[in-house]
Length: 178
Image 1 (cartoon, rainbow, N blue to C red):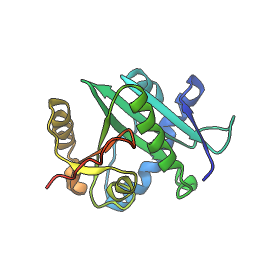
Image 2 (cartoon, one colour):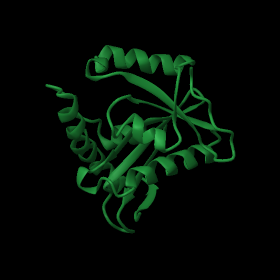
Image 3 (cartoon, rainbow, N blue to C red):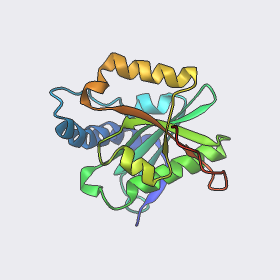
Image 4 (cartoon, helix red, strand yellow):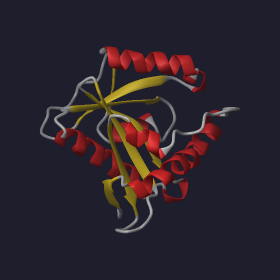
């Protein structure tokens, strides 16, 4: 596994939207969606509370993937993970997830959440391998995310779930919800 993860810099922001739109094309094809909203701009992601990390093949190269973590209402939430399809299956997504968990831990969070499709192979099954387990939305922040997904009609493409992971390997494993 090779790659370099770092905080997004201004030069990276123009790439984020294209990376996400390209990566989303795989999901759109998988779920047979007739329409899919374009990704937010990199500037929009960078202006929201939280952080954006990018990955490149080596130092100084352009980003080929990113992870966006929101920090809202005392929660760290992995909002988006995207890697260019041509760079997939090289461990870059896993590197980004681990870096997101570590950075969230450095910011004082002991857990990080996300929302994803339960049955898309590179969604929930991937995150399970990264230490996430299915969890219930128990906070107002997480319930607002469920509501936003409902308003967008995302459930028509498959079952949506919340997942949670510890950000520190020394923390006891989070128990899955019954």
